[in-house]
Image 1 (tube, rainbow, N blue to C red):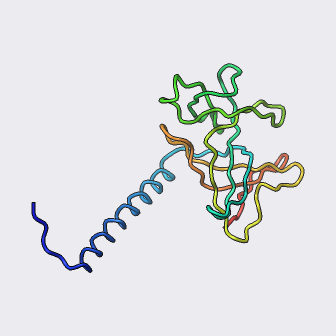
Image 2 (cartoon, one colour):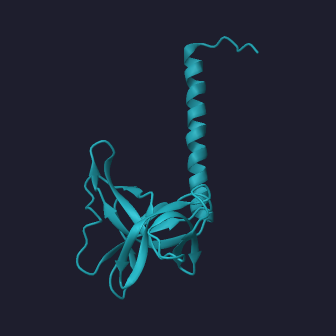
Image 3 (cartoon, rainbow, N blue to C red):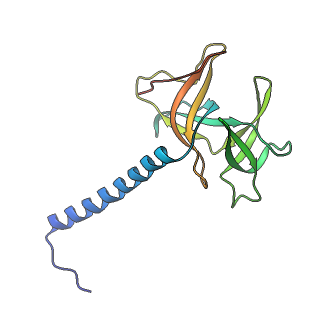
Amino acid sequence: MKLPNLSPSWRSIIVGLIQLALVASLGAKLWYDRAMLPRVWVPCTGVDPDDPLRGRYVSLRLAVPFTGSAVDYGPARLRIDGSELVAEPAESYRTAQVSLAGRVERDGKSLVLLDPPMAVFLAEHAPDPTLRTFGEQLWIEVTVPEASPPRPIRLGIKRPSAAIVPLDVD
């Protein structure tokens, strides 16, 4: 098949339209996922608040209950139980959504940390949300796809005997 002889400016316009279509399709998929997939607030721990190559962000590990035997590492699948995200053992890494990356104690409960961590990008002058006062806990609202790791929506702060208050990090 012979392509028509187009000028360089028309070729550039066609390539630009193809790139715009790719970006728009990704945006539409993420918008659809956020509207249709289940959402849940999950406690998290933060590390690495700045990287000159990536900009300002926090890398967060989700901390969730584990329904299997007392293992700290290995493949896991996620499900929502009531209003809580729960990890359960997966048969193999091929069928897993995430991996277990250790264990942490929080409020007298033993929770497992999930891998990979989530990167949440911050505005240039936004305060570091991982620095909390005594009694405050950092939480993140996520969507939970069936076959991939959770996707971040927004951060929030939970104070003792209070509801989660969303943070403004823009």
